[in-house]
Image 1 (cartoon, rainbow, N blue to C red):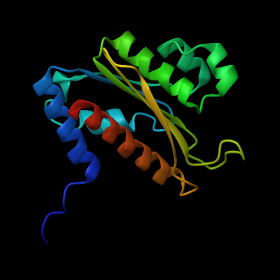
Image 2: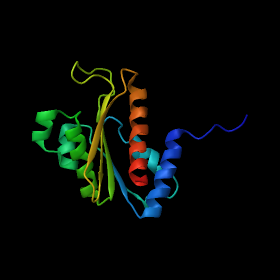
Image 3: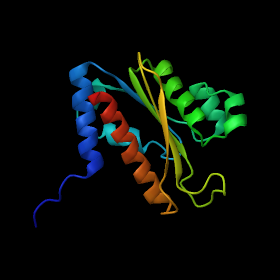
Image 4: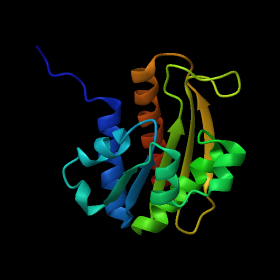
Length: 166
């Protein structure tokens, strides 16, 4: 039986490590609903230690505040699953780890959600030295907890790769 083709996240992670290394860029992650899956994908690549600074899993609101400096007022005004919180998570990860580039992920993997924040809604942010912090929201739908988490990991890896390309 021929070997399976490399998984998309593994290929993206290899590309991230190679591009970051070539550009002298360091990377950090701030994760909530993915629970460290983005960091795990990157650190699975041999040589990742040359570019990967830290992965911070801030599952609770308290951890978001203590580890990443997310403001209580931001959480109160927008909720943990919001672009505003994702931006503060990414900025906090970048500044607190000294990384050049940081990605943040916060969302509702499921089961559950509400009419205002449905299952499968995930907010992302990229903070890069010398650039404005960008953010976006993806609605993956009620596709199941494991699939939302994998889709979120893959999207976050894609955001890092795109930031390194441009």
